[in-house]
Amino acid sequence: MSHIPTSEEIQAFSKNTLSEQLGVEYTIISKDCISARMPVDHRTKQPFGFLHGGASAALAETLASVGGALNIDMDKYDVVGLSLTINHIKSVASGWVFGEAIPIHIGKKTQVWEIKITNQHDQLVSDSRLTLANIPKK
Image (cartoon, rainbow, N blue to C red; front, side, top):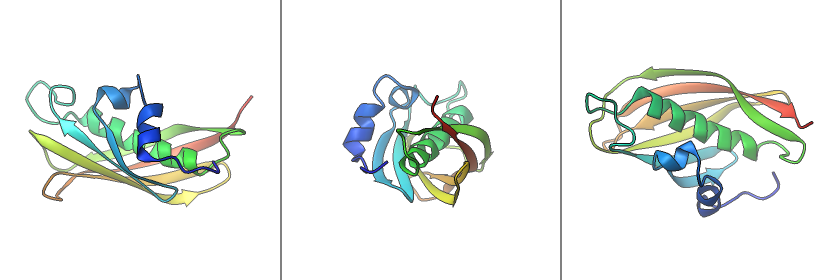
């Protein structure tokens, strides 16, 4: 992708997607770092009142996928998730969580991203790694 979109452009591009439903707000957009915050509220909690692990996983995969798209020629390739591993470290009952994705490997066929999610006190909530495939468009 030759143009690095602004956080507002990514927000608009995410209209009517899972990230919009979860309240994800992008803060940093670059080829080597994607950051966003997500509320811990009725949309992202599990029935026992804590941040749902699936919401954390969705935030992690979303951030790394956006970063992955910025590192390929989107006219020729799509980027798709192959494998997500996530370790949930700390629970969160309210406020915001903050996700940051950085690339570990950007290759011709695959990418590997590390995603850390923290709470408002900069404590680690989850740590994950996403492997992406760069697949040619048909």
